[in-house]
Length: 415
Image (cartoon, rainbow, N blue to C red):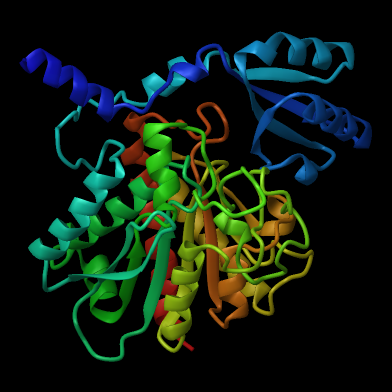
């Protein structure tokens, strides 16, 4: 009986990996428009899951493109690349092996752990527990529900004091970017663990509130644990199409659907039928709008590629305080690198990574939040979205340094 129970719980702890056996991730070096057209041709004939950039429309000359291919298409894709003399490397030769290797943490405790990936039920229970155990620092509210009816729990972290300026931080926009929710949990842990012990964090929590939304796209996150590890979008359905979901980070009213987003419901970068069509983006935007007088910075955590981005992504234009944001990003990535030597690039979204409209960072900036940043956490493609648990701690530790650097600056430059 116990053996059966253990097997069942082990199966639940690990997402299904079977369909990914033999799947590959390629990195292709793109020299010019001819190369881009060849990749578009390939994407028209085969089902290709673009990792970086997010879609075929965002590929630029003199860059590289990472994409995931099903096992049955691997030979065809390799033949195509070779026949057309497209330089490529195989980043991941068998996705199932890398997927299983994610769970390399030895902290296989049955409950919540900060050094392993936690499923939604575990994270939800943790939000309740961390608020109950730290009432002087943490409170929990529900800001909305998802398409499938799950509660969106927001944690407010800080020492109670009236009229405090705040920083809003969210994780888990894209379902498959598991290192992102892991960071939001780590941030809360560090806040409560070091308050009153470490002067820097104590000062920040005394003078600022942090709103932390541990998972934005909860339905999608659940789906990555139960059905498809590589799912990205929400899980909303609508009449007229059998395709499911919207890219929540193309669903904000900031140059909505103008560039780097798709109007096709089947695409990974589908912008939705209208801005804020998704319950999740509407809840997030609604909360920020109702707290605009106090929210001074917006931080959104994604993966992968080791970048710190600021507006704009929806156009090749610079924000009014571009010099200030550039200097702040430069200082933050320097802090981040000081711990493990992890190198980040930084700059405006459109030029640093690729143009993409409808993102939450551009929207927050246009709403009047002067300090708006997107983090793209580890790594640069060796594991992509399947960063091993053994890297959670190092990733979170270094990211904390960058976040604290930005938070200190915001505290000293309130507006």
